[in-house]
Length: 128
Image 1 (cartoon, rainbow, N blue to C red):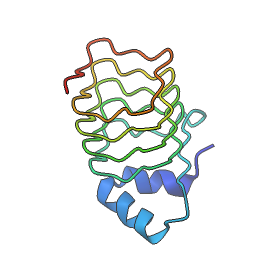
Image 2: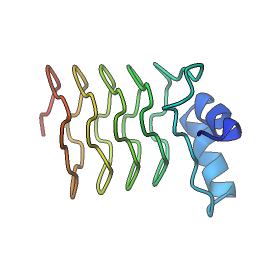
Image 3: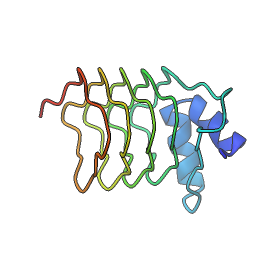
């Protein structure tokens, strides 16, 4: 279950999220939204956000801006990232099993050490 405080920080965007992460370097945000039907972060602007190691399992991230975001080691299993923009994002060592990337812009994304078991890339841009 997501931590409501962490969710509110995420909704405020990448700059606020990064500031909070700098002030709380030992806390890994728990943003598991799988059970939170009311948590809507679709279309949020998280460009450049430091989301290393965060728990976003089952999250609805449709249309989210994650351009150049750092999601190193993040848990995104079962997330919906359809139509999201992840240009230049860092997703190395992340859990990307059963993720919906349909129509997402994944150009120049770093996917080093990632397993895409059961993920969907229909219409996604995988250039670079």
